[in-house]
Image 1 (cartoon, protein in one colour):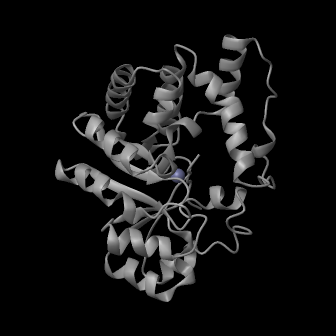
Image 2 (spheres, protein in one colour; image 1 turned 30 degrees about the horizontal axis):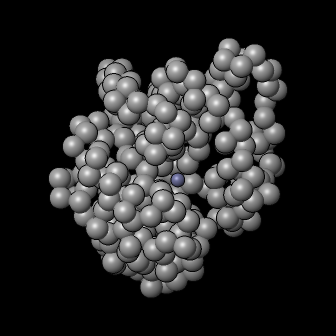
Length: 274
Ligand SMILES: [Zn+2]
């Protein structure tokens, strides 16, 4: 049997703020707020399912936000995520960083870039390459996305931008001007699509925005045309089966379309999300 724990791996879909380990978070809450959290949270059990995305978001805000608001929060979270990648024998990682969340919590972006640079160097010394993608939140609007890209596209530690959030209210096509500004200076762009909505969202990201790497893409399986499009354009899907299952975007691992997409010739990668 293959030992996956020590096998060298890549992780292409990981949100920095959702990736620190519970044990580290628990110690941080104890240290910063004197709060005793349980040794294991309920969502670490195999049969746990979030009632809906809102429940996940509420937990995230309850446990992660207070930590990020402490002066050393970002340094602690980043260090733990890098430790976790190294421990998992991950050799290449693309990490999504929510710059707008950092700003919201009053963190200095320049300070965050410094920490990221140092941690990327530390990982590199241990054969792990890390690339940072700034998350662009659809619900914040097109103008905000353009402003973020203009502000951050010259930051060296930023490898690219990743469009995310509400796919129903906001089409990826609306954000093409922002993503083009990133491409203009050779930054990479990715789009979350087909996670909680149908395959049309994926088609738009590939055909109208010309993206070659899609976050999730799970619902592509609903359309043979979209599957063909992904295969012919050699689009890479960042599939996150555990996330999809826990958030009830698929009923179970057994019914997850990852193997069907793979069999159809789509480029599949296996990732965590949070
Ligand atoms: Zn994601």
